Amino acid sequence: MGRFADRVAVVTGAAQGIGAATARRLAAEGATVAVLDLVAERARQTADEISQAGETVQAGGTAVGYACDVTDGAAVSATFDEIAQAYGRLDVLVNNAGITRDNLLFKMPADEWDAVITTNLTSMFHCCQAAQRHMVPARYGKIVNLSSRSALGNRGQVNYAAAKAGVQGLTATLAIELGPYNINVNAVAPGYIATAMTAATAERVGATPAEHQKYAAEQTPLRRVGLPEEVAAVITFLASDDASYVSGQTLYVNGGAR
Image 1 (tube, rainbow, N blue to C red):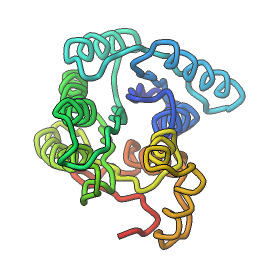
Image 2 (tube, rainbow, N blue to C red):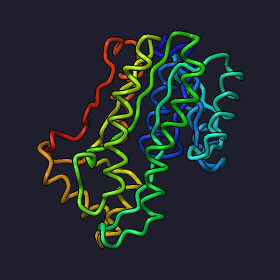
Image 3 (cartoon, rainbow, N blue to C red):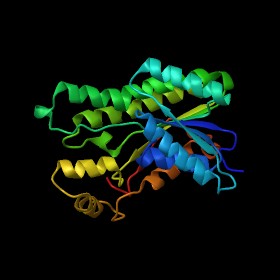
Image 4 (cartoon, rainbow, N blue to C red):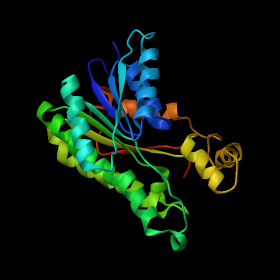
């Protein structure tokens, strides 16, 4: 049996990139995974691919797609209640949904600041609040929030850096508040990972994804960029009972970059 046999996990922003890789890994280790995305078709497609793959894996779990706007507190509450009612529990939450709207401070419109803060930080508040309603009575839960190396500061990302630094404060505080109920709360802060989001960043600065990755690799001690599956491996560790005494931490997954 896998580490997540009989567990129910929710992964936000799970239709692609790190979210999809995490959903696949959790399902491969036995979890029933709720794949959340803003677009229902994308969520269902990823969930179907995961479930089909799981049929060939002895310990494989299943996945179900849900459309949910994680910036809408009422929608989040309703979706999480639906998942808990359908499967009888909610054990793991991975807050991965996020966007970028990069710009220098003097050129950044207020709506780009608001969009990134809301999607990358406020959404986690909504999801954690909804999840704890089911985790606290069960006296069990694992929450993993996605921060970023940009939390340390990154030119052109004042909104994203602020949101991802906020994620670390949110994580540390929730670990204190929820710890007495046997709920672990941790964060993962990826460096440069080859995803659609970083490809879009490359195009924004006038480079191809390959050129952008080459430059990033040259600045990284391991001399390469990361893969979504490598971040997913760390997330699933923190979401497992192998990390039962780890809480309130932010783990950087960045190839040794400083």
